[in-house]
Length: 51
Length: 287
Image (cartoon, rainbow over all chains, first blue to last red; front, side, top):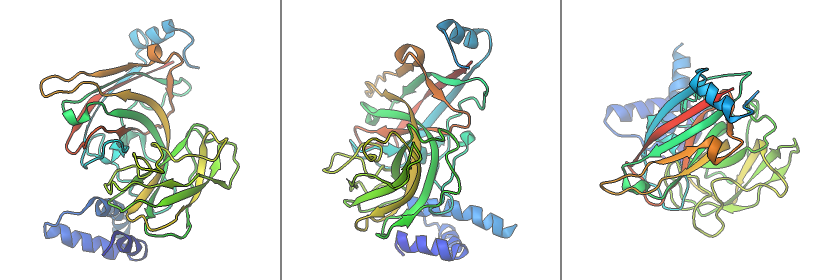
């Protein structure tokens, strides 16, 4: 996915993108800077979702 | 309030306890390009990295506790920058310029591939410098991008006049995260800040941004108030010369720091700063 496609997914299906990033991290794949910024934002959303 | 004499400044520091020391140390995480401004708030260290990670296109602010600690709120007293001291043992930092800024507000996750007018949400307004006077805008890349396209912003100026349009500026091709994308040495570049429409002295809010062609990447539009500038002098493998800025001597009226300010640096490097370290101390005083 391009950064723009991931951005669209972040806006429409944020939890899905968050799970994609989590899976990559669990596989040992490092996120790039753009993905890190999105991941930091998604973490705040996911914490709210869990609550 | 504020200071009326050097005696009052001396008393504030020596007898009244009205001063604050804060240290900082940033490890530049990304490569940089000589002559192209970068945002050191994106780098790890102390204070921690800032990713502009809030709701896309919606105005947001940064907490002062996440930036360089400047001593908290002191109202009704007025706080000023007393001294700025920077040091680097990394030769890459030689002849670089640092600009201390108050990051007042930002709009994150602007889509660099979208050439339609992107409307920004201004439910949140400037928490400091509320008229916008002296507030400048910069575009910071939140990841890699392509660049070499023109863009403009539609904003409200310091007098509250909306519909102001910035002159067209061309983005650089540095393609690195934390880069101020309109700065550089290329044709059509601007400095660290987006130029404003003639006659304007500040930006109160930004209503939209439009790219003429796909720039690529995701970008944060950040509104800052410049506080002070300092250069890093000689740095060799065996000797580093610290740079010092003594505010009330070098700049007689003093640089005021508002309550709640999020302070951090942008940098004009003279080389790639990847893994380079800059550290120093910031001292404030109030009266």
